[in-house]
Length: 91
Image (cartoon, rainbow, N blue to C red; front, side):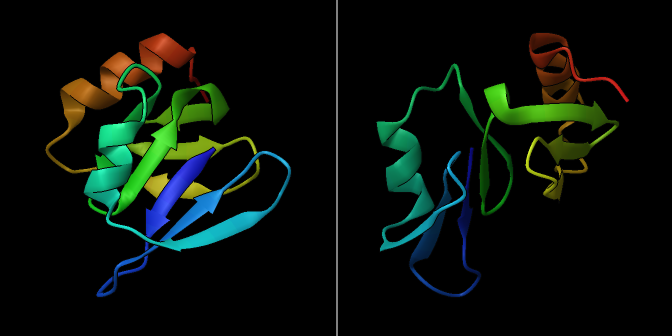
């Protein structure tokens, strides 16, 4: 559903749809290179989301289907708007 890099480390957490979290020593950049850029988006430094698991987007706040909430980049207005249109994210 989403991938989060632990700040100050090379630890990356993969949050899966079945509720499991897998921890790996891999950079977020390497993860992003391996994933589909049509589905996974870097909404802020340290967070990649799968737009298929976004419940809604309110301005730059992403509400995931599992209840997790992420704040997107301040300068990413165009990205937030385009993702909102793609996933039908409304509040």
